[in-house]
Image (cartoon, rainbow, N blue to C red):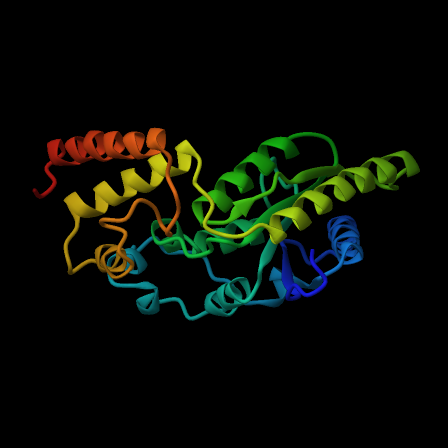
Length: 266
């Protein structure tokens, strides 16, 4: 990063109270990131916060997240994300998925997949496992990150049998070094880059769903309306080339017809 660039805030959310292999991998990643300069880092243990299980009432979708009947630390954690330039989700591989603590946290962010707000922030993940399955978890978290609006850097999987042998530690550190360098470059990139075709399709599909199935009594509709998303090219101002403009128009047409055919309003 340029010497005069503002210091970037990085927050790592860790889905285990056990301060061992997952924590060690996170610390290694953050130390390498700090060595590249221009960042300050914080580790947040999700187990230190009260995160209740989502009840599936959909009140956050219909009325707004402020009406959620659960009064836990969800908003404190969201504020930490909002105050960050880069975010890391780290978890051990439990039963071939993220830990229960991490999944409960992600479920509490459900409304943000409808109304993403983390655009321009970098995201990556770290999974620590004994044997197998971490690659699929990294793909899952990358998908989650994109759905929340982040600029996603592919995560890493570290194998950490006990005791952790020197060869495994070297392999982990090599992967984390590469990941930290890529993440650091992503932090330095200017925002408002053009979306991928897949992300553009997702936005236009969501927009047509909101436009044709909801009205001003629904929070998703008013949020799209207030942010100009019912008419904009994408979530934020960006340049779409001729091909993506044409694709966007086609996505609007296709998904508009689909939602109308399902009984949506005109």
